Length: 464
Ligand code: JFZ
Image 1: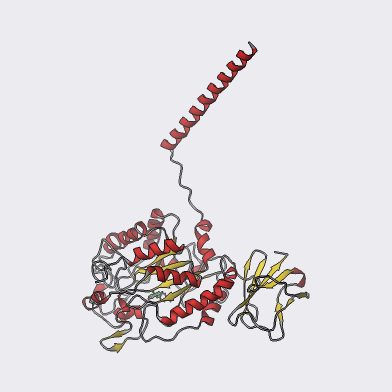
Image 2 (image 1 turned 30 degrees about the vertical axis):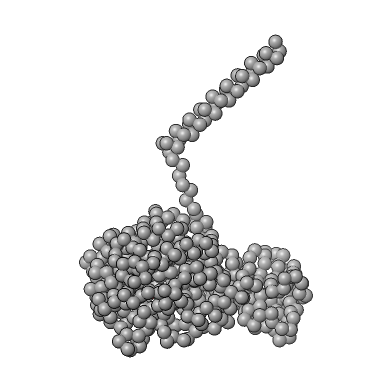
């Protein structure tokens, strides 16, 4: 009897539980039907996370302008290579002919991505379309692209997306709003495609039936895209409301993507960068310059040429040295920004040899020192005399450009704050002696600098 009663209770309990579960499941599924669980919107911090961690990216300017490479009708054309169509006053029909010669048989996406990765770059921003209007991918809304207009007929962006995925590098697109080839944009402004006093009455048609569909293609067919990097927003027909509309359109398609501030009109000078609430865009893009004290509270990325041009020019040999490039990277990180270093490949699809050499040398430095770059934040001790400083929590990375001749490195921090110091290049992390004073501490360092460009000393502090 007792046993029977026990079983009875178990049956009741199990039945009740099942009923409860059933009810719960029903209410859940009902909930799902009437009220689909909203996709969790990432916060801005979450969206920016990978980008803030990355600190170093590769910019690639590549297109038809690589064919003339700075020379038109036997004459050198002044200015940056990718502007030759405008600066050389080349008519649309004539410029189009460069497409027939664009056959970069040396192009190897895997090799490009491996070079970027070796140099320590975490993302690549390539010109899907520059101002000249030529498209590096198989666009369905134009024949002025790599598939239809060139003998090459390989989707460059597709190949890059495959290689980027394979190597864990984020692919991003630079896309020009300004378009010198499109009849509804600037083509009719010839011979000054960049005439900012002129307006094209059909510009809205260009935006709605060309620009936006192209953006949709780029977001749909090339895997996850890290950043859309706009440019050419200074033309008269582009307005801040158009920028905000474009920003919303893109975030609607890909909620987690990042978009630079040149999508709207907020780029002008540094002041626009700090007013990022008023303007569309996620980060500022100081160009060819490093803001002297960074831009506190604002995400920013300095883009810079490795010689004096973005797009390939056969005779531009004014290469920045590896020393300058590595120190720029440390300088930018010490101010809390990202470094987007540009390369301009040849019409054969190759990186000029001086670029390869620099990427290799930067890579050698990064192989030892990348910990002092990735995921670091701005210097809490300003700009020390001997170099720069980056930080991660209570760890400081002292980037020593000028190695002290007397073996004593002064750091503007109270002596009691140092827990430990060692050379980042020293795998054993052997402690360097630290002595402390009131408002500075002194690290005793070996006579010879471990690295002639930038030797990094790790200083673990105990007070931050
Ligand atoms: C633009 C492009 O015109 C150029 O070809 C290149 O792609 C570069 C990255 O961006 O050039 C600019 C953009 C902004 C400024 C100057 C040139 N600016 O803010 O002074």
